[in-house]
Every structure is written in C-alpha cells, then in structure tokens.
Length: 169
Ligand SMILES: [Mg+2]
View 1 (cartoon, rainbow, N blue to C red):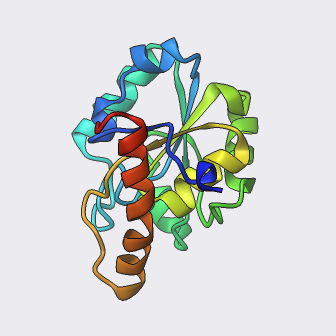
View 2 (cartoon, helix red, strand yellow):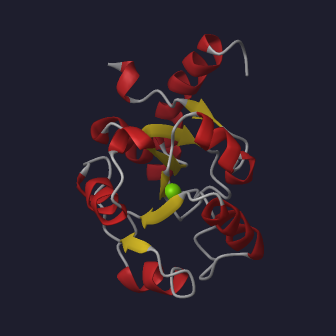
C-alpha cells in the first residue's frame, strides 16, 4: 500500500529540479501544484524565481500545467495570468481527473510526465493514480491548522521509509 504514497524523489525545492534531470528520465511535461510548492498561499503571483525556472523548462521543450486543489478558481487564474499554461483549479487530487485533463491538453502520456507537489496524500497519490512520476518538495510555509498538522504527522512514516530506501538522502 505504501507504494501509492511513496515519492519517486524528494527535492529540497522545485528549483533543484532541472530540465536535464527530467530529460534523462524521459519526462516532457510537469503537473505543478501551486500552493506551498511554488509559492506560499499568500503569494498571488509567481515569484521571479518561479518564472525563471519555468522559462528554463520551456527552453528545453518541457511543458507545464498547473493542477491545483485550490477551491478558488480566481487564485489559479491570476497566478497563471502571465504564463498562460493549461490550468485546473479544484482538481480533486488524489483523484487523477485533473492530471489527466492536463496531460491531454499538453498531449503528453502520463509515463512521460511528473507531478511536483508538497503533499503526499494529494500530489504524490494523484501522480501514482495517474501513472506519472511523483516528486515531492517540502511545503514552503506550512499552515498550522489541526487538519494540516494531522496530515503532516501521517506523512512522516512515509518520508522516513523513503529516506531508508534511499540511503538517508
Ligand atoms: Mg500544495
């Protein structure tokens, strides 16, 4: 069961994921979470580093789409305003529907795509349900509600197992 929640790789930050690394794995498209993965919940627009990182992907022919569970479509729309990628709000991750729509729009098969997100029980699981690579990054700034704290607590055994399988990395 744990394999459904096991990230293929954990990165310190989205910035550590390079087009070269993706190309080596045959990854041609990214399924991007927004909140706490690329920016905090409080950032309405992409930061300069997010834009530069996305441009570096574009230059190497790697496509990207935003697939967010955010309940507010206006948040996703504004974030995507300048970039103009395919974008889904209320994606319902871990269900695969949002990822599948994005893959269809980009014309890329799931096995050539990777999800980047900060949550195991939405982002990683959705990737597994879709057949895409699952890359996990730590949340930029965690919410402190009890719901979020509980989720993080449940994620801990999976992170521990990942580290054991990957030699403490
Ligand atoms: Mg998130």
